[in-house]
Image (cartoon, rainbow, N blue to C red; front, side, top):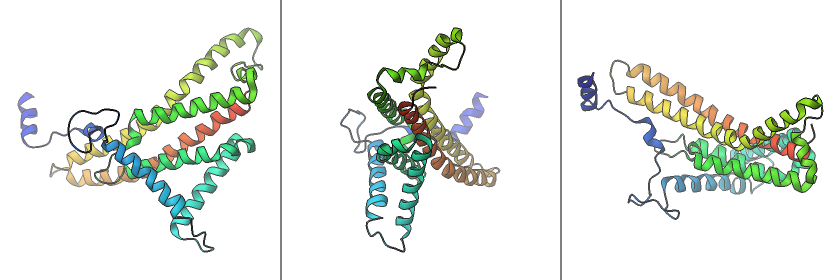
Length: 252
């Protein structure tokens, strides 16, 4: 087995699918400080620029017959606006700009990460955890500001038998603080897994016998990842709306 592994290494068949997620300084060197410009910094900045180009520059003409960029921008606007209104209620519309920004950044980062030689920023927990914590803190602050102590009614299941209410309150409290964890892991985990699988299939493409199968598998996985890029942005956004609804209307 050792000799086979050595032979495979010599033949160039050893690959590391997780290497694509390594954060590296953009201008060389090995040390990464808080001010270091990295590949992650670059692709996050490109995601922001892409959002600005689409939503600001792409829609500035406001033509009666819209261009492609204007059509995409208007579809995204209407899609998220209706989501916020339907899920969180009309009183949540004031938070639409924030939720729209979240969705557009995530979906752009996901799609840019599918480009060859790119870096997928949403595959890193450092990014998704910050996004999830921003949502968690916003929802919690809004809940207490709007409802005061009444926000704690979110954890008190008044419809349950009295003896079970304290136990359910503890469960509800734990699940509430687990929200940012599941919120962030769901996005980063799905994006990372898909990219890693594509890299594995790409590694097998070097073997002539299985290369046709590998190419087909890569194509299928890439198509799936395009779908996942949108779905994960949608899931993150709709969960944000659900959490916002709890903050605005906390009683069970």
